[in-house]
Structure formats: structure tokens, C-alpha cells
Amino acid sequence: MALAERPGPSALSIGALGRSGPGWLERIPTSYWVVGVVLLCMPVVANDFILYQILGWTFILGMIALSLMFLGGYGGMVSLAQMSIAALAGYMVAILGSSGVQTISLNWPWWLYIPVAIFIAAVFATMIGALAVRTTGIYTIMITLAIAAAFFYFTRQNYTIFNGYSGFANVVPPELLGVNWRTPIPFYYLALFWAVVSYLAVVYVARSPFGLALQGIRDNPRRMSALGFNVFLHRVAAYTFASVIAAIAGILLVWQNAQISPGTAGLPAVIDILVIAIVGGIKRPIGPFIGALIYVLLRTFSPDVLQVFGLPDDRFKLLIGVGFLAIVYWSPDGVLGLWDRWRARRSRTRDPMASTGGPS
Amino acid sequence: MIPAQRSIGELLTAAGTSNALELRGVTRTFGALAALSDVTLTVKPGERRGVLGSNGAGKTTLFNCVTGDVMPTSGTIRLFGEDVTYFPPHERIRRGLRRTYQISLLFNGLSVLDNVYLACRGVSRGRFSLIRPRRSDALMQSAFELIEAVHLGAQAGTMVAELSYGQQRQLEIALALAGAPRFVLFDEPAAGLSPTERSELVEILTNLPRHIGFIIIEHDMDVALRVAESVSMMHNGRIFKEGLPSEIESDPEVQELYLGGGHG
Image (cartoon, rainbow over all chains, first blue to last red; front, side, top):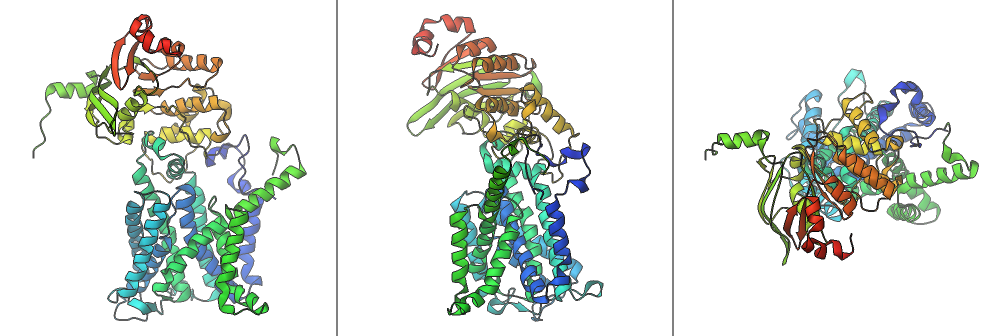
């Protein structure tokens, strides 16, 4: 099986350097093809529940956690406000578009409310970034947690715009191309499409000047400043970039549930995003999606598992917590870290001369 | 308020007839400690200056003030005639200033090429570009040239964390020479290098284009006196003597304070 990423001794790390080598199609590792074909053919084998509730939700949570991974993994900034940014985009879709709350919703057309919702979320995220990047480490976590908490209480108490405690119901996607996008198969492909686009965008941007500089700032902000980079602006721009991914996910989330309320971005949901990103691993963009799948599976099936053991099924959070503890205990860098170590051990035992490199 | 009109003289100095670096009465205190007190220093464009002094003499604080890593408590700093005293570091770098660090400050999670490419990108446009660079890009080409110039050509794809200490010091210099440097601050570039690596370093420094001036802090007198045309001696945050390398070497006060102190 091919490796997703293996920086060999002779492999230059800036992406497009292989132009003179094989075409880009041949350079895609086999594992990508396998995963791609499996995901595309999933509706043939999986039932509606798996497609809509399990995988659809996985893609959405994965995207929100991906926006956190971009900030945390490449920028060294752990933001707990990503769920709030996603929820704001979702709220904007309900407020600017149509919903069950006729007194508030403005009934704009979809081609207007979608870009405006993403734009408003991006502006919100930029403001959060401008505040948060003045701090580092645990203080960034604290300040973004405070913003997330403020957002939750604000949406719960504000009735003129956010309709307070009850939020908005009946928020459905537009019937584009004559398709009802809330039916399982179309929604599966819609969520899959945006998850893949977000994933590829992050992979690509990580090797662009913007992404490279962000990783440089993570490693050594003082030196980046001594190379001519405006560290403050660069960090804020990272929040803006990540927010676009979170905002798209937020819109998908409100369509999937057909409703949005303060609980969507309540503190448990905010922390779940961090758990997903950590469990999956924040070193590479695939980590958040792995974490999201584990989370969704645990969340969906743990009541059944608990019942088997004769425990009350409302204790599913216990199972999630134990799973989280187990992964973080044995692998602080998440499932990705486990995977990397397993690969390293396997290649060592199979071929002691593997360090000289060879066809993967 | 109407901004004050600049006189012809000021315009001329801004146009390049001025000093590369001009410090006037620069003082920096950390609490009760005066790391720099009333330092006045003038370096002409293209001039190569050595700064010598024992540990704690304020040499690195001097560099930190010039690059903006710390702000001076009082005094002014002019770079090519422009008052940059309150400029953030990146604005000074974009005006042609560069520096290396005593302890290598590199990006360990990135390759050698990425490190140098970032340095080239930092002083040009498109810092926020989302488009990946190609091998044929001008900036990528100059990154490759720089890597060759510091003898790291074979390590272009290597992660910085895997480089030897000497190679990291060479990379440190490559980062400082990216773009079009006009004035470079070298903070103990020879520290910890082997004799061979030292002579390579001297070769790199002496072969720099003539228009690039620099200040070098160096404990190794062999290196310092071979690359510097003039020397400033620092002690307790003050510059107490300036002169040619030969004068400094034979100065009795200097010998007692510095050369006799076990460094020679």
C-alpha cells in the first residue's frame, strides 16, 4: 500500500517540484484511490441511516474539526470558537433564508444568503482572531472558550435576531437541479463533496507561501518576524481561512438537522470539536475526519453497547469519555500517531534496510 | 497637523548618501540593569564592523534593538537615513536589514528548502499567496542558489531537525542573505563550528558583495579580525573604543579587558 505522506531523503517537500517526474494522476497514492472509490460507491452498500446520520454527520464534524486542525496543527493556535463560527453561518442561513420562524427570516434567495452567511462568519472569525492572537497557548484556548460561551448565551437570550431558546426549525436546503438535498443519497454526496474540497484545500494551502509561513510562525514567530513577515496579520488571516471551512460545515449542519438552536454551539458541542480533532490527530488534515468518524460511531452506538452490559443507555458520554482517555493515554498525537508508529514498526521489521528508501 | 516638510538635505540622505546604520544615545534598561547605555554607533554602507566584548557586555541587546526585537528605552535608530526606532521588526527587514541568531532560530518542522524559501518570500510580495510555488519560480530559484552558496545543496529536502549543528549554522546564514540584503547583523556565526567550517564561514563572509555591510559579533578573534574592517569594543553596555583591527589587538586596555580574559 502506498503511503499518504513519506518525506524520503531525496523527496523535496515543496509540492510542485515533481513536475518533471510522473504526471499528477500517477502521483496520487493508491490509498487515496481506494478510499475515493469506497466513498463514492458507499450508497450502493450502505443504508440511509449510515449515509445520512453516520457519514453525513462525520463529514460535517470532520470539516469543523479540520478548521481547528488548520489553526492548531499548522498555526499552533488552538481555537475553541470554531463550532461557534459554524453555528453563526448556520444561523445566518436560517435568518437570511427561510425557516419556520416567518417573523424573523428574510427569505432571501439561496445564491445570496449562502455567500453572505459565509462572509459574516468569516468577519466574525477575523474579529475573534484579532483578539485571540494577542495571546498564546492556554490563554488562546481560554479566550476562544470565553467567546464560544458568550456566543451560546447571546443566542439563547437574544430573541429579536436569534429567536432565543427555541432557535429556528424548518431550515431546508434549496431544491437545486430538482433534487431534494435533504434525502439521504443527495445529502451524502453534498457533504462528501464539500468535505473533499475542504480537505484538498487544506492539503494544498499547507504547501503554499501562506501555509508554509503559518507553519514557520508556529515553529518560531520571532524568526518569522525577522524574515519580514507580519506575524500578527498572518495569524489573523489563518483564522479567516479556517472560518470558511467551518462556515460551509455549519450550513450543511443546519440543513442536515433542519434546525438550529443555541445548543448547536453549546459548550458540550464546542468541546466535542476539540475532542474530535485531538482523537484523530492534528498533525495532518485527515486526522479530524478519522476523529469525527470515531466520535459519531461512539455517539450513535454507545447506548446499544451500554444496554448490552445492563447499564442505562443515557450514559453514552461515559463511553465517549473513556474512549477519549484511552486514545490520549496511549497516543497523545491521536489515531494518526498510532497509525504512524505502527507503520514505522512494520517497515522496520519487514526490511531492515528500508531507510535507504524504495518504491512504496 | 500638517506634516513637517522634509528639507533637501533630508531627502538626499534618504536617497542613499546616508549611513547604513546610525544609533544615537541608545539606552535599554531591564529593570535596574542597563544592558545598553547611551550607545552611539555609525556604520557606513558596505562597511564591515566587528563588535567585541565579554559576555554580558550588551552585544546581543544591541542587535535586538537594531532589529526591533526589543525597543530601546531611549535614543534613536536610523537605517539608511530613515528613523526606524519604533518600527516593528518585519518593517525593518523589508528595508534591507537582516540578522542571524546566536542560537539558531530555524523552523525545525520544515525542510531546508522551505526554510530558505520562506526567507526569500518574507522580503517579497505574495506572503499571503495561496498558490503553491513551482520549481521554476524566480523565488524558488534564488532559494536554490542560496542553499548552494552555503554548501547545503545536497540537503535541500532534509528536515532541519536532522541537520548537524554546523549545517544549521550555515542555514542560519542562508536565511539572513535572502532577498536583497543591504545590511546584516551576524551574532556569533562561528560559535561551535569546527576549524574547517570556520574557514568556510570566513570565505562566505569575505565573498559577500561589496555593497552589503555587516556587523559581526564574534568571540573567535581569528574570524572577527579577518572579516572586519573596523572594530567596536563593548563593555558594560557601552562602546568604549573603536578602531582598526590592528589597533584594537595591540591596545593595552582591550587586552586586559577582553583578550586577556581567556578568549584569545
